[in-house]
Length: 210
Image: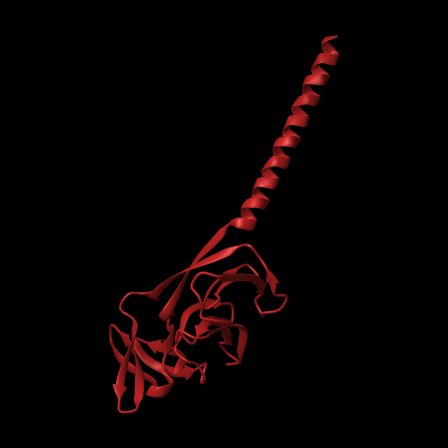
């Protein structure tokens, strides 16, 4: 009799454990579907060792430093309207292009190839988060209230709807002492990289395009 009672108790414990596990899985799935991902993006400067990526009126620049001074500069995006919200992932810089309050484009540029690929457009602003091999983004549908939420691959393919929301926090730089300064000279605005050891010219753009 005791033998059967023990077997029954063990079976009951197993059933309860299975039920608890199932409930946990359902909770995690529900949480994943409704969760919000928070990320930080940089509007002006991202510094990694001796390489600095700068968002200026003339586009996104890659600057090589030596002893804090500019050794070499390369413009990665020749056609960009006030790029901001930069993030580096692998061999690409992801960013938002066009903070003019009307229409923005979510894009990426190859650090070595300089090839720009537009990932999403048709919104007054974007918030995006790179997680593993996927990008989640929320697009403002021009009214500041309605948002479209999507998930896609890093190359912009296989775009799908998702209930995951993205909240983006903005910082000017990921390191102290580095910033982009814009100065107006006639019909142009000129961007400079400011470092603790000096100020270095990046490029210029017509004022009417900035």
